[in-house]
Length: 194
Image (tube, rainbow, N blue to C red):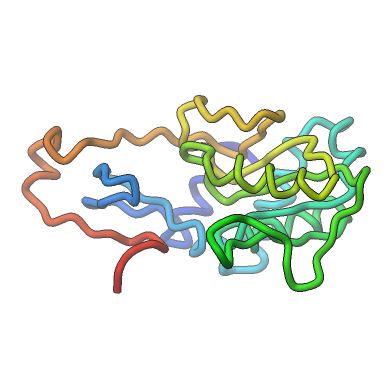
């Protein structure tokens, strides 16, 4: 799948939004990715996962014994990556603010884990998920995401593969370009207040 094909999947699902958005970081952007929308169609989610799995180096794919994703954003793509790679998929979640395995999920020492996200921006959540996985004795051998928004700066401590890199400019509140300053910001993310 080429970059244009991936963007077409995001546009077809109305997951690539344009307007004026207030990001969870407090910065503003004219673009927003709502990955939950691109993944709500099972066939599309499967196609994207197969493409992402194919983008991983072949030798790495052969070593993966489990896929683990951080909840909530990584759950669907993590499940589909498990299917694409033919291994079990599970997720870590933060019931008390720190990622942990729950719901009967368990990793074994010696498991070779692929940590999968929907979007990596700063890499903080990914690193926190990797730490929780490694605390079980399993080894995270790589990380993957549908979208890398870090501009290539996210250091996850393991090889990282993204299906697409999107680097939309973001702005501090006092740096807004006139076209954004003229419109009200919308906060569409999962951390938006109702």
